Amino acid sequence: MTEQAIYKLRPNRVRRNYRGGAMLARWDGVGDPVDGACPEDWIASTVEARNPGLPPIDHEGLSTVETSVGVMRLTDLIAAAPQYMLGEAHLRSIGQSVGFLAKLLDAGMRLHIQAHPTAAFAQQHLGSRWGKLEAYVILDVRPSTAGSLLLGFQHCPTPEQWKRIVLEQDMEAMLACFEAIPVQPGELWYVPGGVPHAIGEGLLVMEIMEPSDLVVRCEFEREGIVVPPEARFMGRDPDFALGIFHYEQWSPAEVRDRLCVQPESISASDGCTHQRLFGQAHSSCFEVHRLALDAGAAYTFASDERMRVAIVTTGAGRAAAGDMSLPVHKGERFIVPAGGGELRLQGGDDGLQVIICMPQVGPTDVA
Ligand SMILES: O=P(O)(O)OC[C@H]1O[C@](O)(CO)[C@@H](O)[C@@H]1O
Image 1 (cartoon, protein in one colour):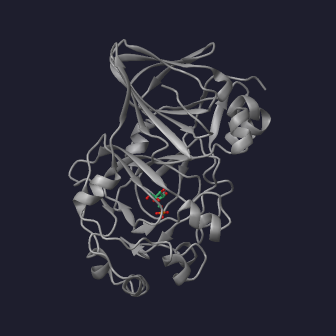
Image 2 (cartoon, protein in one colour):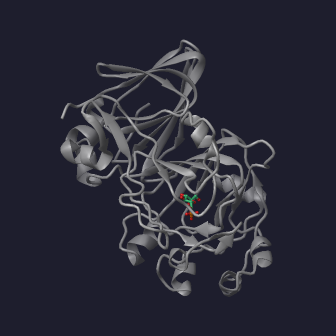
């Protein structure tokens, strides 16, 4: 198989327990975009979706890429050229998975209230190296929706009260534990394991997380969508599952202080700003950068021999690596393998914004 310096990712929609996806369909050029049962696109995913209680779909969640010899599953491409795709250091510390999971998430309705295990809990009790710490880049808010998150308890129940609320589905009491946290496009948030949360109606979010689909779902039905019993508590009993929650009370201002992240400026010159959005201070699993190029501006994202997963979030332009150069536009997602060299970007007439995600594989500094 020929090694390419850029692989375009195919759309990869995944079923969830909420409706959405119309904004993603618009990104993908679908003529008549509507919300449906597949509101997420999993990007460069080597993680299978877990949808217990729904009819099985083989390999749901696994990404496919365009290659010179046709469309291939990313896991097969990596297996065929692990060193080129991921690099030596990655293979040694992480193996043949991408090492993190990125998603575009398009919420046509508020998601149900949930929490995820920390990596420490997952290692100790679930036989998994990772829990599911999540980081969000808010990309857009649908008109006529407020744009908010439920995040952390503002009126914290005791573990016994929370257990009663969840088991009896006392929705009035459950919602009374939270106040809406307003969010804006461009903001960065992160959600450590154990923190209850729900993404609000109308948000389009780029989500980067530890590579698992481990979740405790607390609302068993929303807007007629029933979360199947086997999908609620990670297949365990309620006491075990609800044991992952952190029972801390944070006011909306404290939530913003703790969990709204300020980007770190890496460079700002010649019509291009380069920021690190999430790094080792937030996660030992992934690192995320944002590049914003004015019309005609050019920028080279240096290679430190890690795989880079790129998503064009605004505008259009060109992306080049090695001897490949492609036109790219809003919604495009692509991979530059560890062995693909530096990534060269150029802004088109309306400029170009690209988010780049990479695994953490040890000491890192791409500045
Ligand atoms: O509706 P579901 O299937 O529980 O999906 C939950 C979604 O919520 C998130 O955990 C975000 O909070 C996504 O990563 C996940 O896909």
